[in-house]
Image (cartoon, rainbow over all chains, first blue to last red):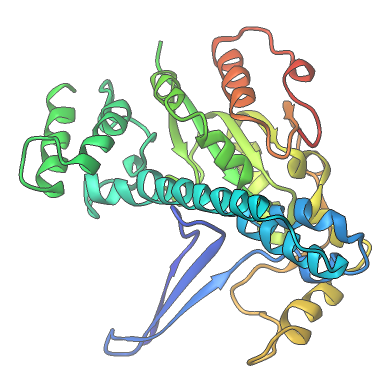
Length: 177
Length: 177
């Protein structure tokens, strides 16, 4: 019998989504879908509005990457007015954009990916977060976890890899329970 | 004193309020000493748990799923905070209200589509006719305006709510802040 596995919501993702995986009678993956569960209609409600509203408005398409949308719409505004910005302004925009990338990578690493790297894919979902509940009642799991993050980046923790660091970390949490 | 249970959720918004929440940076450590984050887009838990003390909700109510979620959140939370302008007024998501669902879907999925123009109708939630703020559906205990509220606002407000100190919201933030 065919079967559908649904992952809802997809967590630690930059956005709103569901995943469905369709299995065939042999239990093999036959198809998989990613469903975007949110639509607001910027494509439509922006039509007919004053062009100078667009940088502030389109920045609200995504609070995680607002700068990309803001800069793109600012460029569109300039095209409408047929103006060119000074070199310094273009450079400042570039800095703004690069700073956004640094921020986004930090978010992606520390809050979205690192729980998997630190705790492993098999860990209890309730604790799979940099600031989630303690690993065991009465421990400082969440705090220990955040404190451990920089050492994963720099490799300064004893051990020979992320896996062993995560194991050591989990042991420590359990010992203090 | 046992730790309070904190949950965060996003409905129809841009994730910007959550990003601002995470911008508390090292102050998240302080927060992790006072609360356990039991449910959030950055936690893997799929089901909203029982007995949540403080729930922060970002975004407006725009789909049948949002409506179900906000009712569940209310039923399982002692204190519900409408976080940011979308949750409080409908803000940007509600800009589609005078236009109507059909027109915005048509523009996004038919008119602008270069391949396979079709309106998604499977698995994705049905959109409500109009986007409404959270308090149109459930009782809200605290309104925290801002687009987004600043990290400073989150820190001051959450500290006050957790410790039971008085909270002066207008002194902290405003609409569009």
